[in-house]
Amino acid sequence: ARCLDDELESTFTFVSALVAQNKMHQALDLGLLILAQLGESFLIHSDIRSIIMVEFAKTKRKLNEKCDDEFLNMKNMSDKHKLAVMRLMYILALSAFHADSEVLALICLRMVQTSLNHGICDETAYGLSVLCILCYNFGQIDDALRFGLLSLRLQDKTESNKCLPGVYCVFYTFVHPYFHHYRSSLGPLELGYNIGMRNGDVSYASVCIRQYCTHLFHCGE
Image (cartoon, rainbow, N blue to C red):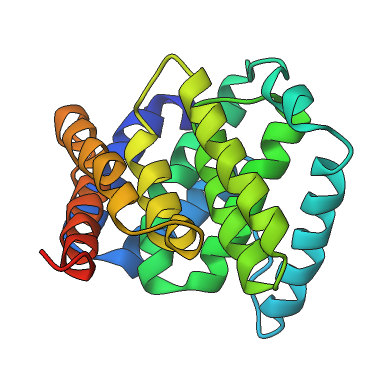
């Protein structure tokens, strides 16, 4: 390969393979290195929680400058490097969830910030779905539901369903059960599984079907 652009596809495949092999720390380390080369570096040190608070407040402030419909009608992202960044952050999110949840928070906040600055894309809905978890953890329940529903609306609006398994996995596992009965999540989780398996997104498909079985158990079946 003559430049980084030539290596991106093989890098995405390699990182995805590491995730599939449960080598989450290796996948995360390699992915963060590639993101830095693409101009998206992350400050990760002992005071990472303070960084998360700052980035969370900044993201919320920029989002609150727009109503939901304005956000949904933003231009589509066209910068190929930013599209590559968003794709890689989506792949890395699952490894970060297992390896370092604080890095997951930073990754998904950066996904939303990148979308606000450069336009929306398929992966934007996933960043919003994780943002609603952060809102819930910080006691901002109304915002958690708002951004969760916004992530679903954005996913429905996109022509592609490649990130649907991830969006549905996050929303119907971590947010939806706090507001609705488990039974109402069964259909979406099954759909996330089927689409994930059809698209080759086995990692998120597996989480969807695991949560489907867990929720089914909670329903007494």
